[in-house]
Amino acid sequence: RLLRSFLSVARTGSLTRAAQAVHVTQPALSQQMRELAGLMGVPLLDRVGRGVELTPAGQELFLSLEPLLGDLELALSAISERSLEIRGTLRIGAIGTYARALVVPSVSRLLASHSQLRVQVEELTAAQIDSALQDNRIDVGLAFSDLSRADISQCQLFEETLSLISRSEHSTTSGNVRLEDVASQPLALLNRTFTMRRQIDTVFRAEHLLLDVRLELANVDSLLSVAQSSDLAVITSGLGVRDPGSLLIRPILHDALKRTAALRWRRGRSPSAAVNVWRNLLAEQIQQTPGIRPVAAP
Image (cartoon, rainbow, N blue to C red):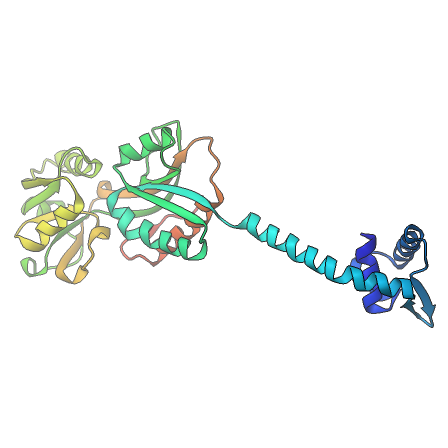
């Protein structure tokens, strides 16, 4: 403190300006200079008119101190910046569609700004994500909103509507489609181990409509490949479509075929700096992605 105050006096040649620079009163600064001179055992300043000049001893001290304190300030600044730098490993689990459409683009932006960070992304089912969170195999998951587990916390991010997807030339209509129209078409669907399939079955069963399911598959990529190469339509998230020009995406008109996505983590675990920064980038990615509606923060 005394040395910083002395440097300020030496640079400005004025107790008044130096006091303002170091944010103390002028009497307090004068007392500091007397204290420093007492510790050194020699006078450091001479009064000249309304200002001050360095004595030979003061000049010698100034020339010795200035580069040393400058280096110290640079070192402290560098340490402070490194303490804010995000490093380590961020482990993310996400259902396949969300991983490809949202997680990978946002993680790419994260890594571009934080060279010391490493990220692991796993494509998992919703149930596998919760299990991995509980076993501490991932730090955060992106899956469907589910408030049934007391050991998992979540933050809802966006809402989407499941869509009927088919080759463009096999339909003359666009826009929304009714349940009755869906039931009249031959379909390929995910198998019944998937939450999405169980959601679809529940809705159509409640409306007493029988689906014409010709093919069951185990991943969304295969489902969309069938839609592109056959006469079968599929029901899935429009987020999975990588080439929208070749497929017709028609949201299905039914509230129960909407689903809400949430960021999920183990209850009681504080999010890391990496999670917080990635979460902001993910929110920006969601805002830029057509076909989904961001959920307002509570």
